[in-house]
Image (cartoon, rainbow, N blue to C red):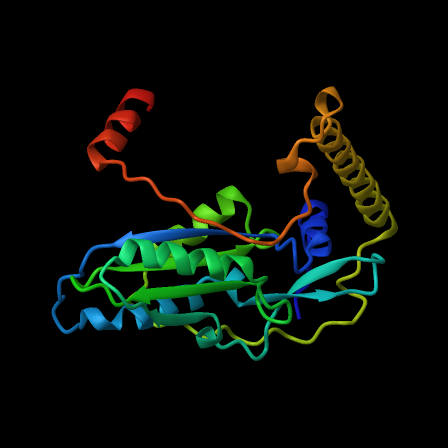
Length: 251
């Protein structure tokens, strides 16, 4: 089994998470009604999303603890991976579909992802009277930062992705020695140094928040209050023409 240690910052995200402080990121995408393609039914969106997600290797991997380095963790293929555990459909009631989708998305974003499985979830939100729908994607921050999240989103949503082909089953890896994936002494020293650097940055950030929360001796409620874990989602509408103008202007 191949072993890929989590990078120090990703490992920090993994260990710092708690029920009140879930460390995942997400995106809520709205889509208009899909026209029927030859031989396909627009109702098969859930199957399409599941096939595309299952074809992304990283989404088939879970985090497991390792003996060395101490406190470390590694990515490994989930032998019992079932994409239907991660991709689900929820039918929303009511005529105000965008508002209902935002409300449900906020509730779903409050819940940490299940840590024994590959740390991501996807929800198809349906039920709009006009046939439109929305997709909510949740990715643990250890799995994806900003650019990795964009790459995963492209693999799921972009027309370029080969999503209409079923994912091929990967061939089994030859057996390896239990020690073959362990880092050498030099690598261990480098990992320890990286983790100490990350810890120092975390302490600096924490100290900055404490200082900012007590400007002029007055506590700032938004920074000094305890986290409730509550999430709220607000959306804004921007025309695609304006987006294209920004792209053309800025390159």
